[in-house]
Image (cartoon, rainbow, N blue to C red; front, top):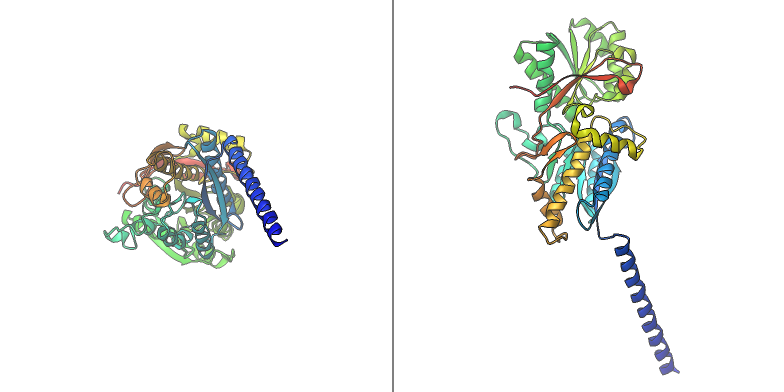
Length: 414
């Protein structure tokens, strides 16, 4: 009986094993027939909810579009690209948690994001330690690529795995100062910032150049962007005799500040960086926002011949949200990762090597292609070689999506 039972069990196990083997072979064949292969995941970190979600959703959708386009073109033989998105809500702690999750997923071989420089700072070491490449379409703080002493003549790259397609505040702030002083003929500025990495840094580079040109600072103020009540600051601005306000921060606070200072009697333009260049700024500022300015990275995407295909494909894909200020840069950030993956695969006989992450970081340094936003490549610090910027002005407030109009494109001439 015992012997018979063992024989029966052995026979059952053998049959089961054969069945499993057959199933496994069929699954593998089905995968091949379905055009399977290796899946490479691109992580996307951005504020997908909260005040900054308009920009964040544009980032996510544009990366998704890049992955879909690469798959449709079979751009990397044997590789299928997918994205995994994570919401940082504009908070550094959330960004760091998301970075740790991305690192733990071995299928993720690159990450696009984040929007905020402060969030980016919290993620850099996590990615760098794991040799996982990070490409931001929107971080502009110079210290992230050139070290804390970047302005003192000692530039040192802190993290090899970090790159960005957006130019930095070392150029953006001074570019705005030159335009306002030389062309808009503004001579007296009131400077406000939100005390965050991006806002404070941008305001500082603007102020340095503005005073160097001969402009006067009528006053400075730091605000809490979460309050949305800027009555006291608006009164100070009105009494300062300034002919322009420069705000270092983002549109959730900039819009209300613009509205409140004008209602207080300060009938002067508010100017900011790429953090306020959004249709949501126009919505928040209302009719008081007409005449305000913003600088943003690159040339207007809508005017670039290189962006026509991106705009058409984005519309065709049916995304509910606009691509916003960073759409083209997000697409190019994702495509830079795709190009690096392609190089690594081709150098390894058509397959991903075991140390793919490290190899992709190395390959990223030499990536160069004609992207949505123009030529995409990186210098020795991981910064974009494309230094173009554009000044925009709110010309209309009736349709916020069409409120901003380009005034001048160029770059800072130091």
